Image 1: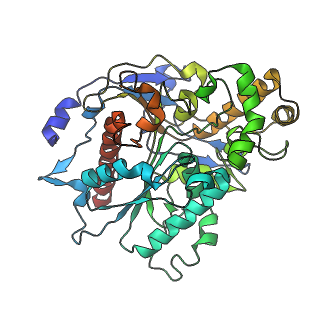
Image 2 (image 1 turned 180 degrees about the horizontal axis):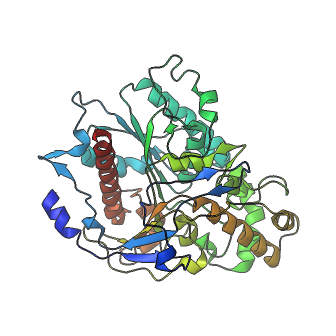
Image 3 (image 1 turned 180 degrees about the vertical axis):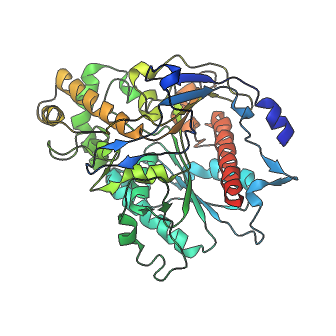
Length: 446
């Protein structure tokens, strides 16, 4: 494990700055941490303002103080003399999966993070329950988390680590659990009657999740923008006829979840769920809940993932994709790049009359032109909404793995024997959690 002096020495690198709004340096806002947000709400459910528009890409992330130690003890154990866990880490699996998908990751995270963490593997949405809709699964997950918090009185902080579809379940759940103010567990009523209290929100920095301080929100190969569009569902090989047919067929195989992932759920004049989840609206304060976390990290497979494309899992436009590095970061095999993206100011996502017409055409008379037009409109609006927050984007490439086509399961080591190419990713996740834990405790002590 690296000492602080070694960490400081490895930090001597020059970051590459990504300036997407093409402003001259004199007009640019100062670089801010991508793991924080500073935005304010307007009266419109799809209208927000935000902070800076600068992304920083850092290579060689082992330099990022990921192995912080203090006098031989993990900093995460400081301040908890009773050894009771005070940080809840919720693991959420993906479609048609179960708690067994986290066997390796759970054990490895327990070993690396120590007793300060209560690592809880969600079991409320196993197997075909994942077909009942993102909203339904998200509400079940929220109820499950509330029960865990209620039973463990020592908890003070909360983080989420989700794989694939589980990332969308978690995004819905945190909106249900969100409160704009810090919640005192010792006040009368406690968690028994929290539901109504948690719904009264405004889009602002801070707030709590299930009455706890939100620290990390991490997803692995999650289709944040859905799976509609070229190569967003890679096993369709980008063939237009297959991508056109997939949308109307999906609900027959994966139920309500399928229509939500293909953005065709609901009436034509109502925004699809994933677009609403890129905003604060009547359904929930989705953006406020995400913004409450100190750090939002998205891991994305750049290739060989047959289930989730690079664009949707990294919340990028087609024009923002570039050829990724092929060399792994020092100490984290198959983790090839990290980009820090600060908030991008805009008036937030909208669902225009043109989008309504395009959605109706995509639902009732799908053809290549109508489905492409609808997807392009909605994808851009989802990106505009989600980019109101800062993100750390981690690119993963299994091109050199023995079985690269298992990328979707490798990224979270679904099976230790078949998918062990992803152990470097789990190590990177663990060290990211430790880093943010150290930062959180340091802030609290100042």
